[in-house]
Image 1 (cartoon, rainbow, N blue to C red):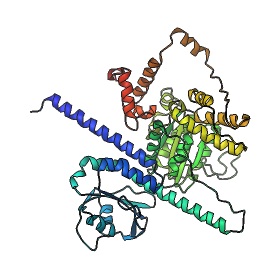
Image 2 (spheres, rainbow, N blue to C red):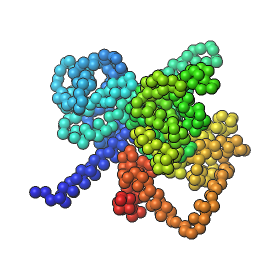
Image 3 (cartoon, helix red, strand yellow):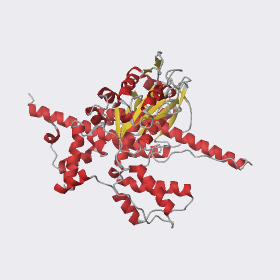
Image 4 (tube, rainbow, N blue to C red):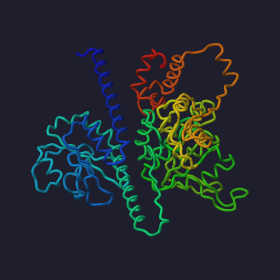
Length: 526
């Protein structure tokens, strides 16, 4: 008979193993999310994927929507795979498409087999595992892993593969879009060279960084992973972050990676519209609904049909309108002001705020039911001071952008300025950094930014008086802040709603800091 302590030990071991698996899934997905073409995808396959799955060959097959044939998108043993078409119903691709779980194949010598199956069979690979990846807009993908020894593919391997399946589909789509973009640019260049019309211009639309977001710090990689995982769903997203952190960029990235990316995202700033007009702005109005309503007006939700609506500064939405927004989220229907007709709508909602909605709820300025309905998938964007590794990258990006626009040739920042930029608190975050760089370019008299004047941060009297009594050490401040975040997350450290995400840190790093600061469970759990 097992002792209770033995059961606890086994349970703790299993939990640790699952947490390690989740960290590995996050790590692999993060690497895949940054692969935007086949060369980068190849590096990920032959690096982190091969190290963890130990496959002998890796084949990714892909079919366009409504087509009866598929192609090999990638094969690790043959980088020059020809774009040959294979019928869907070949006993391999269609079997995986129709199966809810991983399909196990025992390979045999059969002339009816597709060429890539014949080639791996000749190499001595007699075992294959096929998995249908989640459907993405316009694409159906199947992954085949080939092994000389089937025992190499374990239950853990299968769980990890399921965990990264969505990101694999996204990466395939991103690679195809990149290839399509490059082909279009090449075609335009060809047209330009062959044309006698010198006015023909090539407009480059490729976005910098991750979908236009600049930064490669660990904190931002977590954000990129969260974006990639939620983009293809229709779930409501709540983006949290201080002013100037780039909440609108994150919303645009989610939309651009979504199945409705071909439609325009509708943006609404809830703080910039007068209270008496915001209902009409969101839901529209009928002719004669109020003084001045001379025509029928289509609201933003109707404009976002089959697309995305971005509600910025959602914390500023008047309390009386919050109930109507809740109905839209729950019932997927609206009524125009002055109308009595219910209109069904299909719009994905992304909201953003720089306020603590939990605090707004406790102070009765925000409905708790609306908060929980919005908080389906929260993404917290770290402040610039918490991603200092990105300051130099962002600074150089903005320097190039504004130097070109203003017409000055500026080569970079002096070491002194760069050091000051990294040390600055940046209360206005990325937006403030960009403004400072633009101002420095305007005043620059040489080909390098050697001076940058940082605005003073004013502290109110009440705050000043508090610091006079007790000056806390940096370690005390850090411990208090981490405890506050962990309590906010109900003691959860890792996962999408854990403290590590809010702090912009890997969960392993946060665990080390907790241990070093002497934080124990009884400190944050009642």
